[in-house]
Length: 150
Image (cartoon, rainbow, N blue to C red; front, side):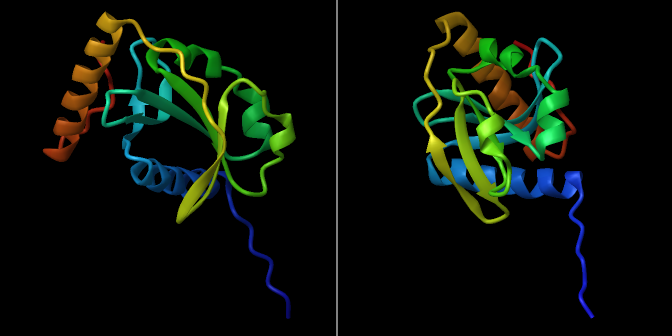
């Protein structure tokens, strides 16, 4: 008897997010998941490099998720670089060429296209870095923080 396993969209999102976070750590970033930005948008992963570079990854669980969610441009004012994170079976040809692209499974990932870097203004970087650090500390202390107040 054949067994058909159906993987749900939330399961794909969780798996890709976990792999992307592991990849970011391997690349020297400190990632936080589910970060609400000052404009009200929620970044799936926001990460800070050792040099203060801010990267946002938007996880796409499938074709329909990408088609209905065209807000990725709204992340740009809050990061130096932006990329999509997708599962290996995602139809990558539908993604725009401008952002970076990483492919992830539950164990890690690979950078297929580097995210172009557009440096943040100094004042915005400082405010976001402080807010990121405070959010990380609150979460580490058991708080339920989600919002960057920059």
